[in-house]
Length: 104
Image 1 (cartoon, rainbow, N blue to C red):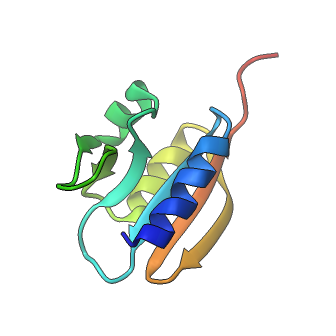
Image 2: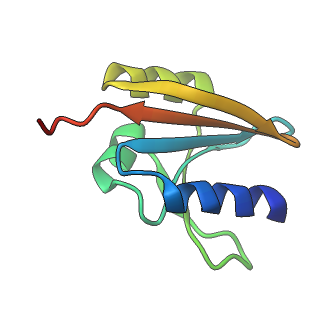
């Protein structure tokens, strides 16, 4: 992921509320889909089958799954998440999802 994309993602993650989730995928790769950072909900990451990784030279960790975004989006929809926005940043696709709070 480019430094510009990483900066945008970190800014969004720092300002997202707990009921929001970012899903990131580079369109140039057939590799993993990024589903969270080191502060993500551990239970949700287990549900998605995500593995926590730290890329060489990075000072942050990411949760990644081997599934393509379509399958990740299906899994998240099944537990109440819905897509509220999607954008392309260079060669990277980013989805922002929201789950209504169970708190009354």
